[in-house]
Image 1 (spheres, rainbow, N blue to C red):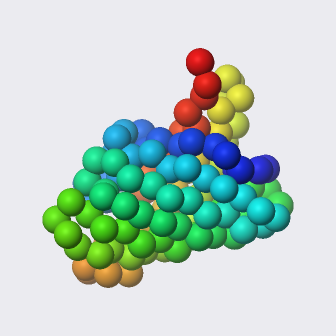
Image 2: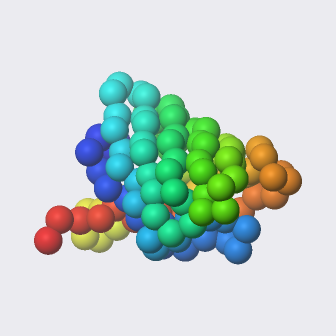
Length: 114
């Protein structure tokens, strides 16, 4: 699985999360290293770095500045699913490492070109 040059959007998140359908991730991958810059919705700017396993699962760390001006950090584990249209859907389990240590579940989907 290669995520390089994929645009991904959050489509579902638990209430304590900050990503939303307005949040767009621009993924870059080199070997097993994944990086992304993202923004939108409650997030002014964010970055992530992760490792991609042979089955496409991702273990990542992220940091972001939200619209309240807070610096937030966390850890996330993503499992990919290939949808019928060929797009990647990521099922994520995450936990804040700042601002309390609550966690949640989110789903992200690849934005397919028209």
